[in-house]
Amino acid sequence: MTVAAHTGVRRPSEELHDGPRRLVGPLAALDGRLPGVHDLLLVQCPSSLRPLGGGGLPHWARQVLRAHPWVTVGRAPVVAGSPADTPHPVSCVRDASAAPETWLPVTVRGPERGQRLDALVPRAAVARTLRPEQLPGRIDLLPPQRTAAVPALAVLPVAGQLVADHRLAWGPIGAVGYELGSGEPVAGPLSPLRLVLRAPQPVSRRDALQLRRALSRLRVPVQAELETRHGAVLLAEYAAAPPTVTLLTPDGPREVHDPWFPREL
Image 1: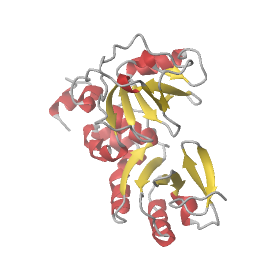
Image 2 (image 1 turned 90 degrees about the vertical axis):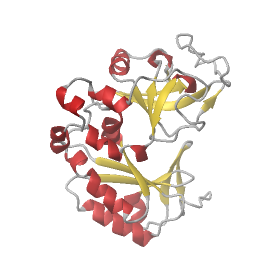
Image 3 (image 1 turned 90 degrees about the horizontal axis):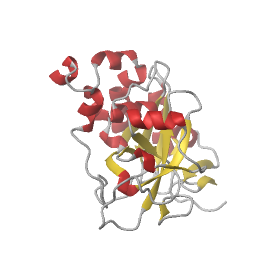
């Protein structure tokens, strides 16, 4: 924790942003790649978001985005071009050399139950991106009293070590991930710890069961998902070894026998 964080010279959000936001452009803060599910995006121009249901942003979403313009990438198809229901955001200045617009599926979450908005945001409006794997080390940027007050934050290092013992890349998602990325205190005393476990190669049922049991001994509920090349499957479901599992994909859930080699049933 820096001295500035203790003295209040800089706001937590400024500490976590690591400086001013970048100018938007064709590859703004994405390093030439499209973001993945659960990535956090800092939006340079929040007014450019287009709700999937049509219309403008609701009042609560505008308030949230003005206070902390971070959104979470959803598990939905990316939209290319400029569809009629998502016109080019004239309020957001765009680099003239940018490629045709790419619209990313994102979710805005509000402080109240039920405040969730699925939307599209233009790639050019993204000022910064954070992957879940980048978030565990940022726990030191939070005030110690905050970590102590939220059990899901307190057990994060232990959970990470349990996952690392199985040689899986991982990162927090959900409320804990959002707080670590944005600096906003959104996780609560009853928040579960949600994790994404990168599993491009098959994980045995035995290893999955051992990991699930180890995580279940922590003092907070842990909800983990194995992210394969084709989508995600819940660790608990896969470890139970049912005949089929639900694979979460950008085009919707699918029932498959093997999440690493999915075939139509």
